[in-house]
Length: 421
Image 1 (cartoon, rainbow, N blue to C red):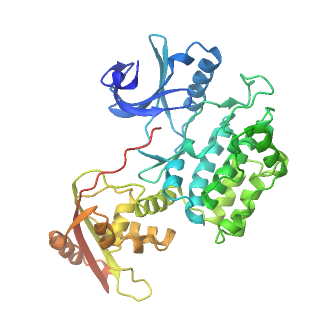
Image 2 (tube, helix red, strand yellow):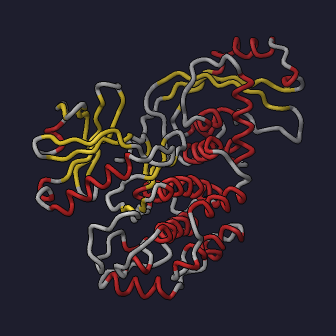
């Protein structure tokens, strides 16, 4: 049965709403869990694979591996069930886009944005490895970024329990070749450092705009294996000259042919990236990512909605922001969670200033005029005079010498369709 024929059907405790696409082993649909009234992604093995015991075991293993994890940087599993002999996994729905989609829009990311995504991925990998599991297929398509800037690792179809034995026999390589470590390409037994090699490939690609190792059209694995075993790839500094030395060194270490020379753990990588980025929290990372992705047009408002944006802009020359920059920052701070009223404008300002500090230039770029020029909004500057007056009446010491900027807008442009989980 095709996905369109499933729309409206009840599967387990879920009602199918629409098709999202197809994963490596099966169909993917968006559904709603009736008991908790929340969206979920249902994955089903394609019927032609259903008779393959190996694939059935991999499907079950994905559910078991992910179900043990409860981490903000890993897609959660809600349920696993059978319907008329067909296996389904219900997972968390991430309203956003995968990293491959982001790189298709802007081929190369600013180093700070790339490092921020990498930090969130490292946090997720640390949790995965801590429970004794390998992912074995870390790649841009399996890294999701939500509209609020959250980063989550998904697709445990190749997950391997370190404490048990692999389902495949020695000499069989599983994974996605451009992101596979030499030992993985050779079909040897792997450990967490194979995931760290793949992590290095992804980080390099975010910074350089291409994977570190070229994949030939013919004779893929032998030629690719020779490349990764040599440890030679285009210099990252030539493609991303502004990347800090510490970040370049981290990429080089992750891509060492010998696993013993790579970082010892995802925890070590996480610590290095936290130092490089001045120890941002996950909330800090989400704010910075949301700001960047909305400014670049990766995400767009979904439907017509009236929004109110209020903020103070300092009159001090040293702290002055460009006019109406807060409009863009407000859209970015919460991934364009559009507010109808601002009861505490000071809170908005604090979030805005924090965002500007994390990613200099983003809020300045997102002026209200710039957003309007994209057709996202229609300005209505007279709608929030009362909000501005209320703000000035508060008498907060922080407002002395500051200008209050208030505006409202009607969001009119629909967003891109969300990516499949």
